[in-house]
Length: 137
Image (cartoon, rainbow, N blue to C red; front, side, top):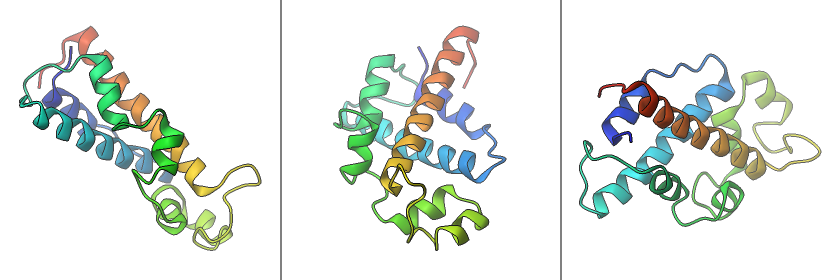
């Protein structure tokens, strides 16, 4: 099992070459904050291991899924802020800085839910990688 320190260390190495990827990494840091708050509440240290189920539940912070997390106000709530977090300048222009819907099938909170899903997957992937390879903090 990975420790909080190991996960944070590996997350710092992630590179975002696109606006979307940079946004996903920023959301991953938000989710790590949720895990840290849960960790601190339980009186655990950064060097204590985190079971995968605890990691997943802590990231969701009481929500059932990422759609509920996003739509329930646990992350960004304004379309403008979500668009700024995830979009290139050309997409921002196309959507009038988030005033227009991102596409015909989604609203900005749906797009954020997708990004949060990817952020959670990034964190769990890091944890699995640490478990497999024994990465040191």
